[in-house]
Image (tube, rainbow, N blue to C red; front, side):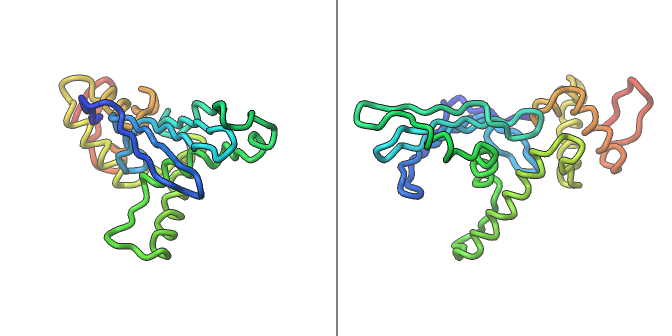
Length: 195
């Protein structure tokens, strides 16, 4: 089941690499590689002299996809130039944004522990950005699929899996089938629901 809040999007502001950064995140969460993450994140990097960069990444089909990239130049900032476009690594944007939400740091981590956690999280995100056939469906993810399916057995369990994991119905059916094959759901005959 997707978590939804009645409060609007959450905004975080912080400094990173000399820029003021603002993150706005969805209050709706979906499963990404076994971790609950915001359904979308918008990042604004406030330019120092240069234009602001605005990027939105959303979970679609179980993968973080870049859905918006734009530059905004205010009166006191320079115009958008070719160098700003060249400096943008679009392939890294989704990985970098969502890795911060997937990483498990623990309490009072050392700099080395933080770096290791971020690298591990980046690998999970990179795996999820691969074509669907190569994505990670760990045993923990399959257990969560089974749990969501069982919780919604009376009212569209496969649709609930699709919504929870941010995938289309057909991919949700594949998730349910893999959960059955892993033994987390009982086997059925075609057209029957069993949890």
